[in-house]
Image (cartoon, rainbow, N blue to C red; front, side):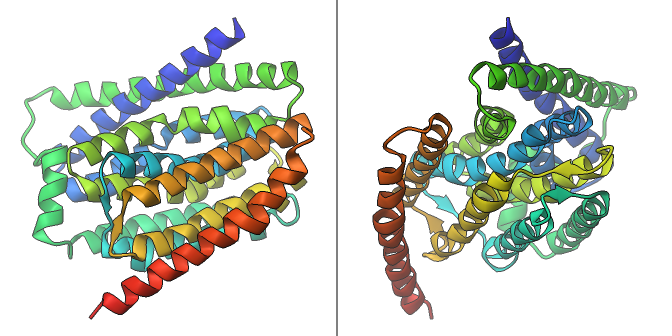
Length: 357
């Protein structure tokens, strides 16, 4: 019964996010908002609505491990797994704004997360700071969108449709979609969190590990569908921008709101402070050299990202089960795989920089 509730919760989260995005996008279009802004804000942040629902529910239920692990794990999953999978489908074009502004901002807020977590707690004041940063970022996106090229605007218009007049009463349907989507998210998050806690207790693992793995992957399904489908359709800016925008929303919006609504802040486990949040920061840093190499995420870079996600998941499993091969696995990653990857990316980045005018 627990597995059924968990799967049903995931389904409600995905369906709820899709319904919410559809209603909100149509309302925004009817209000005359451009497709570019809808894509950068409503859709990118809407795909993170499952993370918001789960983390807020977990924070209110005093399940800090799931609340924090969901955000950290989703950000790691988004970059390593989703971008990797989308790049394997088709090489992804990276907009210059992502390289100059959005990725450095993702690195900065990831580092800020570690600073806030050093005392092993996210306080309400820290939540307010994060959420205020999100509002400033949205204002920046709206201002920046006016300078986007015709090609980028046309790409978002093809995906989200040109603003058009709606028939009388159409707004009522879209408002109903938004409300219905929110209701599905609330119910789905309740089922998912409650069943995840039972699963964690059954396998004798921490809430943090459950949040970092199956909960994070499950709540990231909307990002996965959006980015892979956008890549197949050739909408490469949307595929990459959706991931970076969702990661920024996860930290500033999801973690910010969860910290604000939690009765006494959100506790952060020492394991998250010493390992998982640094991994999230490292993953954000990896985006810079990969994005910089010709402005394209190639298939071999996508395979590299996927390989690192599998390695990260394998480490969590070995560490949780206290497997005998954990020391050997850690040494192989630390002294061979990571240095080799850093050297390869350095050489490729240097060669790409020399080719630039």
